[in-house]
Length: 123
Image (cartoon, rainbow, N blue to C red; front, side, top):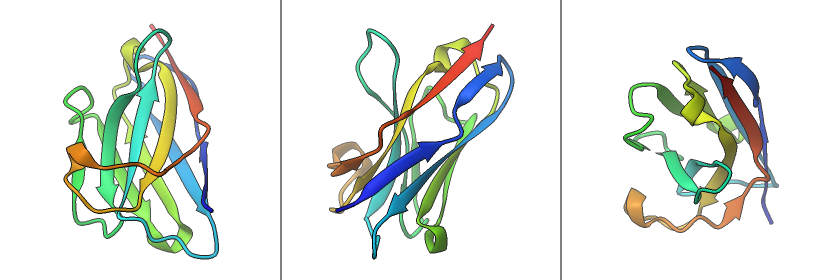
């Protein structure tokens, strides 16, 4: 139904910046919200940030607040996360996801997931 493809991951030095993109395929794409998650080895998947597709509201995990910025371009069916002041603890596989049903950010059900892109931050 919907395919999400992340790009932009790679190796970056601590203090550097990286921008991830997530492009959605499909004849029509109109989710309620898009989110970014990450998972480091041996840890559970962690919420990073989300944005309503209208772009009106954004929501961030405390661990990235002030450093990461989520945005979207509706015409391109693409969501981004700009990551600044990166730290080694940010090293993880980053996934984007789409939520079809509305709800509070903490309660959203994400229906579609990308395959992930690796972000490695060296010290």
